[in-house]
Image (cartoon, rainbow, N blue to C red; front, side):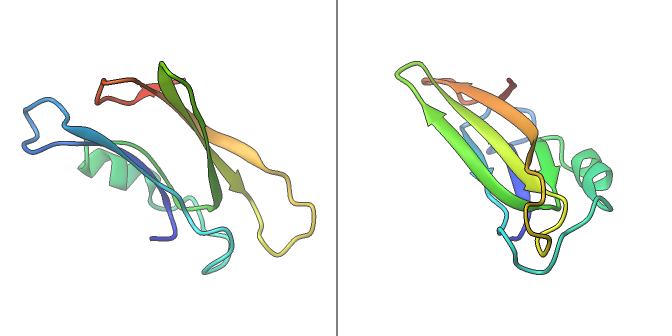
Length: 102
């Protein structure tokens, strides 16, 4: 998909979530990515809690109580030592099918 996504999975939009979905972007495919579509995609998909069209990776930390997810991005993939930053972080508690900003 070459994009970061964090979503609450729903059978129907007006019902509680049945799960969460975390999608990692590619680290280098298709260039640097851009900022052009985030607002539109999020506005059209209320179940999406995060969308980013940048390259990077997802860092996860599992404990007995929860899962913490950090969506890490790079501004440039062809530049040596490009800075890595966290675009968003979420926590999903054990047995709770929702994403909460960390």
